[in-house]
Length: 329
Image (tube, rainbow, N blue to C red):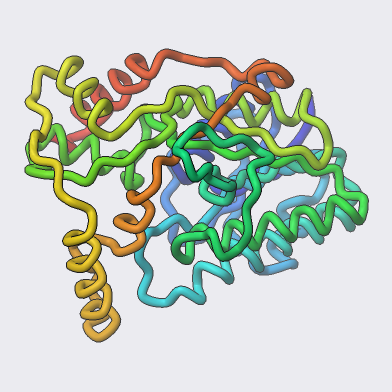
């Protein structure tokens, strides 16, 4: 079976990608920071390697003997005290991975982007991989850095690197140990800590389907193409109703007006730049909530065979995992 380098295997999506590959008999070199904890136990076919994706030496050693690369690692935060770190990790780190893969003539690279780097339709309908987009459309440092990283991927594809891009939407499911911003919504809901909310729209998908989408992109994806790994579009109001129905806990009823919350978030953002303390409400999160982020995964379904696990199953799996692991009090 093939051998691959995977980055980000200590994270939510990357851990599931690694699980799927190991189940299919792959041998993996999992590159991680020395300070990151392992979310997967030692097992046959998995070798953990400490290193930094920004270091060509570390990446080159980890890539030795590998015929494929799954670059899943990303610095995903909606607030950061030093934004330059995010660009170093997401842009420079990606270019190091691409350069080493090109030099070693790997058979294929699967690069994990995000739907956040794609365009949004002004009428709120679902966007596709080809929806027009530019850097000025990007809200916040995370989206900007991922957009810029995609341009690096396109440059290396033009130079002959066999790379496929996948764009997960909003994954939910078990194993979100950090948790991600979306996972935190579920945890806060279960703990009764959401008295009010801003309505927005998101595309939800089971994290296991996203993991399978990575393998399918390796096996069936077209070089240089993008694939949205998503499933169901829901407003946040409808998502809370779904959580209420599946858990028996009451959904928040108070929907806040957008403009006053935006003003408060902007004030908090200014204060955080002075105090270096994360604000209670992220300005980037509020700005993103101003648009429905609906997406169409039809291309990945048709060309890759992307599975479509019911979102109800994803929510149940996530809730069960949070309950079993002490996130709910």
